[in-house]
Length: 276
Image (tube, rainbow, N blue to C red; front, side):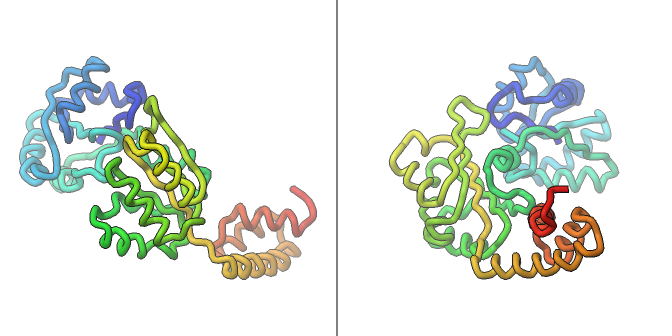
């Protein structure tokens, strides 16, 4: 399973290039798209299609190929295979037939976006693409409204504004979010602010509605619950710090409350009156 660039062709790793050059056949979702990348890197390995409509039929063929030829590679149009792409049935069939399936890691749009979002990434939920229909989209989003972890979504250009409008309606206009557009490409854009601010930006600039999008929505923060959590954490740390170092106390308090260890450590430093 070979990860390919999400935009910049030179993000293909040396190990990925070597693997694609040496395997007996490459399977890709869109052979026309992938051939351009392969030609850029001088890769002439035979290329075949693998998409959601032929995945089941390809499984037996690919297992037979592995027995006869020894190695195959799967790539997606962009990023890491199987992330919002077909292929898991192939992986399962190959493993069940006794073959090793190895990842050749590389680009992933959701990880790339999280790394520059400026929003907590210690816990996140990747939910893929929202439904296309308006009512279904809002119902689908509603199940995540009270999640306290960061939410990651993908969206396409022709639905981006409608999805942002739904996010504002369901999560509220002030929920923090980041929009990452055209990552690693010429017109890469990273926007961070409230849901309503980002919606307004796109509504007022048609150029920002083009490309492929990763939407990162901050988790729900209830002020009363957050205050109660901090009060409980403070009480617990006050007791623990009498008997153990800050790092140990923070680890224990984090495990007991479910709150981030860094939050516990920072509060412990303040309570202890030093930064050791």
